[in-house]
Length: 275
Ligand code: FES
Image (cartoon, rainbow, N blue to C red; front, side, top):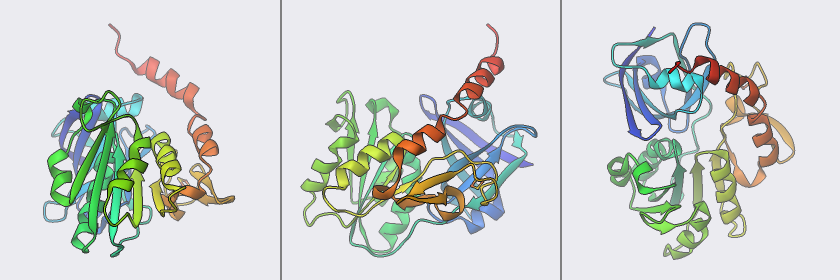
């Protein structure tokens, strides 16, 4: 069993979960994920490793509460335990000294970009963070992110912090950076990544996304996570989850994400507590 050290809500419906998983912490690299199983007979869900502490043997994931399984995760408290935290899985995101890197994150993606920004900064890159949310009260980990970025831009749909609008402000942010941007990394929901890629495509900037697919085993055996990249079939778990965002078939990805929507809705309804 994997002990829960802490579970806190960092913004409405967004939770920070710290688990004692020393083997995962020891091997974790930026951009990798774990597959959690919350109950013995429950589904398996992939969550990006957002932080880890090798000395303490801890890992941190940040997730949004959207369905029955994340609802169960959101009810965990210190001292509880879950059956499985398998990982680290997936390929680490490519690291190196590229120049000026812009990392954009929305929702749980704000936490996902943190370890990437931390390592890119330590490798001598200039690191620009861009975080987006519907409103300013949905931001979290602001201090952590600022500590590893040279500059952080905010975008809110209601204009309560930073630029008003959506991730489509990315183009104007990039244009405002003196010396330009050498590489963009976007993490968050598929819609945010797709829209962000449409901003960087005309600018010709290499843009890496971390695909958010359904997964079962996470080791290339079930085929559930397959995606089309430049017309070729890839498995997000073993070939990714990081891909060139300009080559992703976003329409296919979003329709595959909806494949079990009916079953997910029924499970959510039947698992909801009665009033
Ligand atoms: Fe099964 Fe990727 S999750 S092949």
